[in-house]
Image 1 (cartoon, rainbow, N blue to C red):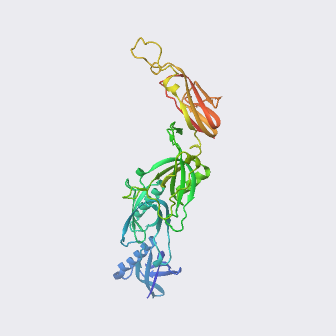
Image 2 (image 1 turned 45 degrees about the vertical axis):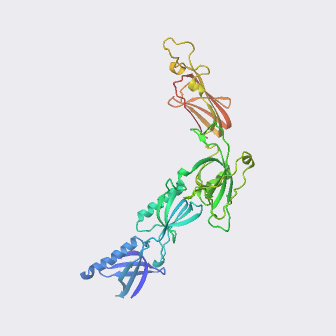
Length: 449
């Protein structure tokens, strides 16, 4: 008798109950094996059906089989069949806990003809651990619990997208992942230990140290902070602000690194979620081992003059890249004045004289006395054609950059529109006739071209 291994390519059931199974063998050739006459010899009926069932299941799951066969009546009759699994069913060895953020996830499928050499499909996960070292782990996608492997992969991909940390249970021998969980509040990379800063990239440098491979996957980013926007419409708060030079560590090849490259190249505004890494039992920030420079790159002269030195490096957990002026379609408002709308004209918050019908003084809002109100805004605009949309049906005058603009009515006659081609800083003046303090004023400014 001969023994061969391979994958089931097809199964045929012919007349007379004869089954023919075609296999792809380990040398790349194909061979046909038969099960004779399913209807004959009732004493061996269950044996023949069991062989057919094993062949069918092996073909459905693309798993290899081992066949022992003999030549009977000119065909290779199957005497014994063994199904070989690719699933990893060995018990886990020594396990360790790893807290990290996900850099990349790569799913690999490797199907070989040789049954004994075929390996399960895996996901290779690149991680940055809490001590700022890189780690490569594998996730077996062909465990017997397929839904568990799928859920673990979805958690890892979601963590890479959101920048959240993960807690992994890993086999120490081969770094195979056995359990995955999103990081909690006590982890080094949790959102509770992070801050969000806005600003601009000053430098992007690679860490190159031949003596250490753990830090070779990181880059150093120096980042000058800027005031964050407050409220709708990209409004900047009128409060003192001192720029600070920060130092970030970002994994090379990650999506965050690519965005930092774009931010440096195009001088775009960015928002970064970062955190100083704290190892359990040690409240001092942990710097990368083996080759991270203790002294960050020198700060720009204007920043150093202001008394801001580069800070201790922090790990980058999330990056947001903004368009110029933070929005390509809306201006950045520096100053907005609407006192005339809310309080009435200057020195006229209350009606003159003593009211005869009430002992309390009534304001313009109570008496509904109409007057001419003014809304004024100073903003910075990207080059383009802007629409000024005002929720008033009539009595609207619009002045943009010192020039009066035509007013158009909407189809339902409830909104007024004005248009202007603007670039740079500009003052916008909206004058409203017959205004009363009990009305609500809304203006929306956005670019249409």
